[in-house]
Image (cartoon, rainbow, N blue to C red; front, side, top):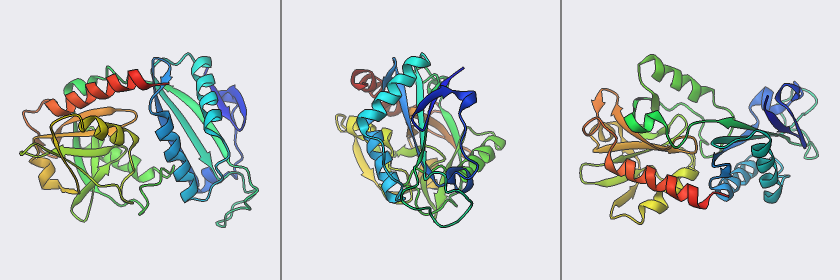
Length: 285
């Protein structure tokens, strides 16, 4: 049985409990982060913690745990759960308001802090060898996708629609332009060899893996355009792929009914995936 962390204590998962009046439960008034683990070490820890702090600040939730303490919590859970490869999931809600009320509780209300481990096959993922398929669906999320909140119902609905359509996942479309995937940033390579990725604004999550990927891309002789792209551009792309903490760089071999390239993972996607894994292994803490 897993050990989890809840509000200052390490407890068995079946003993972890929160108040029914917790605002994360009642209003999805909470943020989260996912930090990948390789060889029992944390990937891009500092960048994930910086994004967590930003998300908390954007929602005026108290940022009560220091970076060094987060690191200690993560490492303790990795050791207790013998996690070699997988993820650390952390969630911070505004806390227990004592009753159901749309108005926020007083600033003295303590946030609810929950952390758990999840085992997963990251480096040797079967999907990375074959590539995944996506369908495009409307992006009807709220206008602050840049804040990593726990209100993930629409993303879950779109994943289920994609599954029902026989695809692995969905890319979301707003005003005719692809914003991002349901839980990943989306990228294409044009027929001219230009990597195109959506710019950082409020319509997409500012991906930690995306940032690391672009740093690795800078070492290659590949042109980059940070702009939105259309569904048609995606369907006619030379390559397509997604990036996230749980998938790293994942090739996309079909968008809607259009096969991308030769229907196999593209060379740039594979190059960046391998480069990212090497970078992660060498820089994890």
